[in-house]
Length: 91
Image (cartoon, rainbow, N blue to C red; front, side, top):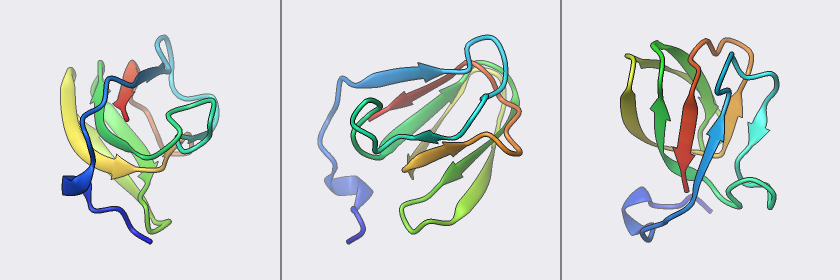
């Protein structure tokens, strides 16, 4: 069952990835040791591409400018094809 992004509740949950380089591997954001569910917003400190997996299982490439934040519902970060660094996701 897909989650309607507008029905998600506010969250204080943030997780940081790839602070000094590109992602070293895929990140399943729904795993208990990560966010425990999909993210709703992604910040990237550097300009670049970030590949994410949407709730429907498709991968999409997001283009970030340095310091940009995008509202996106994603269940995973994908290392292959991602060049952005300093990634912070909000649950």
